[in-house]
Image (cartoon, rainbow, N blue to C red; front, side, top):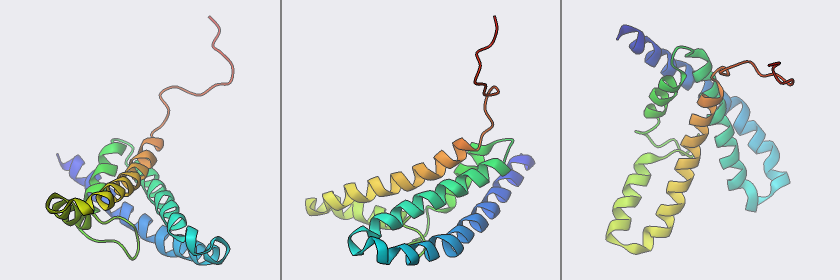
Length: 149
């Protein structure tokens, strides 16, 4: 039990340090540099792509440093992203998604926006989990030659 608590705490601290480092020192300068080249039409797409890359890299780092249970560490870190609006820094906004779902239940005009928001949030959390899955060591060594039998 104590080991799981240590892994969870370490995953949250490492995850936030990595995510903030990537977001502020890499993502924002790269986005500012590429915005004039991409133009206004592609800016939102580029920002979503950078968010996916930042989350995948964060998932990889958290999973790599939680060697005993990488997926547990990534899931604990992902749970910390559920409760706040991170819109200025990251496109994750689960409280907005819940409000939008409630509005869509009352008025079907919100349904297309709900589908788009659900897809975006699923893509972002999927990137985080994919990074965590990629951090695991391979089951058996990779070889370019087939084994002799």
